[in-house]
Length: 173
Image (cartoon, rainbow, N blue to C red; front, side, top):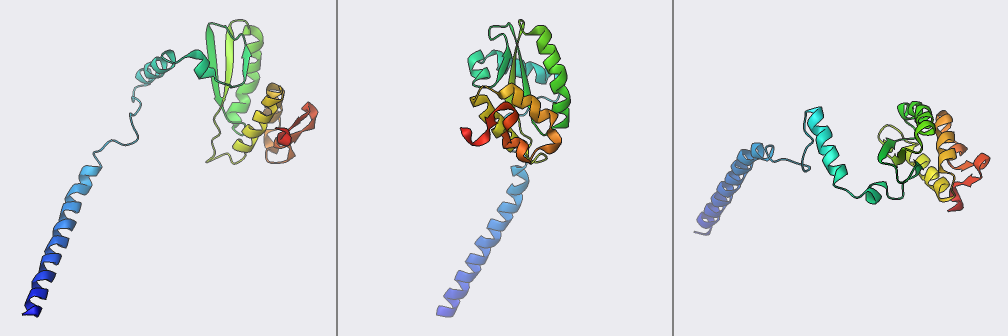
């Protein structure tokens, strides 16, 4: 009699286990339908630009700028934010024209530099950003910014840790 009860119990467990697997197998495709990661940007470029503009316009200017390095007129009607990575070749190419643009429009534009290190492809981006932050604390962000981009091929050497030319020491903060 005990063997019969044990056999019935094993059958019930096997049935419940089988039902659980079937329910999981049926529910798995439904999980793919659940949106992940919050709202997605619109596919249309104009709609995406409109969404970005709404977010930026609804934010306080001081909050957007924060303690980021700036150039130009703090009260300018135009704010230009550059998201950049010191190891990015395209960012380095844009640095020269940006300096020229700001020289011509420094009264009309507030230029805000935002760090955006692309760590998956630029292993020296974060050390360079940290070094530039140290330079910023010493009032030397822009000269250091220019030196990092001018010497981009040397990132990872002593350049990103110590730049005596500008009197900036990474460990000084």
